[in-house]
Image 1 (cartoon, rainbow, N blue to C red):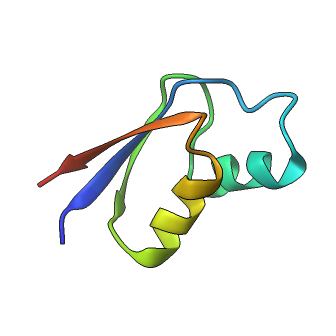
Image 2 (cartoon, one colour; image 1 turned 180 degrees about the vertical axis):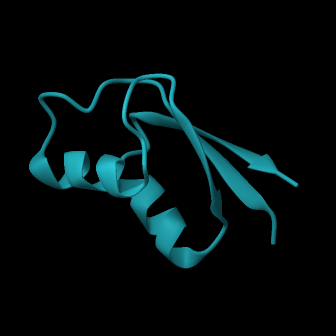
Amino acid sequence: MADLKITLIKSAAHRLPKQRAIVKSLGLNRVSSSVVKPDNAATRGAIFHIAHLVSVEEVK
């Protein structure tokens, strides 16, 4: 499987505590910050909860 590049496009401020915790656990700190994570079920599940805050790209 390929990796996923996750970019925070909207602020996590004033969001539900669970959503803020997911953003922090993924390693996203500021708007426009990006991380590369493996494409697995755990990562996909986290992205599902904060899909309205991030953009996701597949990288090889």
